[in-house]
Image (cartoon, rainbow, N blue to C red; front, side, top):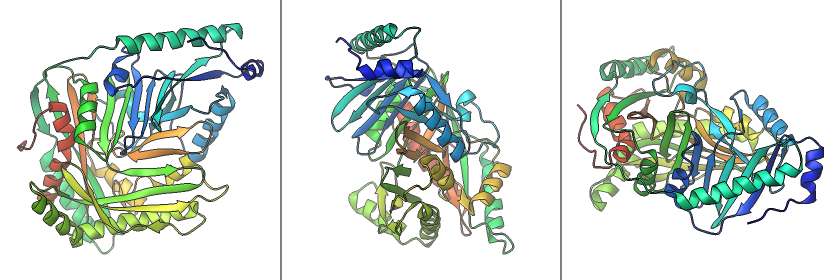
Length: 457
């Protein structure tokens, strides 16, 4: 495949653009395994797939990175990068995450991944509307003539790597599984309930997270894990973000925000109960959740806050759908969608993300008081757990972010799984512990590649 650059590339070179992109169609079908095993030399990579499996992004390498800041600064940084980049097909996007709380304590395994950030990849694969495209991004070469040569070499390298990707079969076994600081965590639940019940305190809800540490016999095959999550966890966002020796990976059911230039949408996901072993039991449990006063209260807190926070960004009333059940393999939640018409000349996507995060489903209510309480009382930092993770277009103020739950951070043989639950006035510590054990299951099953329904006590 020869590359012929349009005349505007030369003009962009004369205008001293710093980055240049070139997009071409890839006619063959690509599997997740082939994509992620094709470039072992790159230790920066990401994967993103929507719940309907119709939009997929895979990126390798890092041309540049924007570090987290306030929404206005982030948007200005993105605009500057766009001005420095020649992207005639408008295919480029930035992928990454914000940390849950920039002031939180450090946590093991995260390393530099914990600080978050948004990267512009060297190579971007995009699957949309049944079509694969590859976008190459290179830095400005010494001469314009060298630009075509550089694109040609990158294209050849990619096609060759895809043709040589080899399947990897690896057996692995669990060495240890340990719930972290269970007694301390349950005491913290009791303390949170006491705080919420105090009439002199404004807190209505506090979300507490805890960790499950796994050690495997061999380094965890992260590509195989992602493949298992794709099969085992339908109707979820799949994400994978690797920097150096650490990877954040998960299958989350929760959208934080999707924005086009015309529309903004988010969802309220809160309250949970296990799935039934038979259809009749599953229906009974779902109805129990739909009529649970504790869970309805927890869900309504999320709906009201999201509607309040989204309204300033919408030029019409934010509509809330009827409350329904969102059913995943291990768990079912209360669910409602919120949709607004995007206001002209309103806040940027980064500003909206900053306003929405964390939702009451991951932080609490009121927002700032809950964050400060969590910061003080949770012994281990969350890193990117519960944080916004997703992509934003470089050319347009559009993109999609999910909430990084049902997730783990992985390094070598070790994985730290996270799960959280919303504490309200009538919460019970043991019941909340059992809820979080249920939420550990998707990632634990994916890592072990076996049934994980037995207790860890």
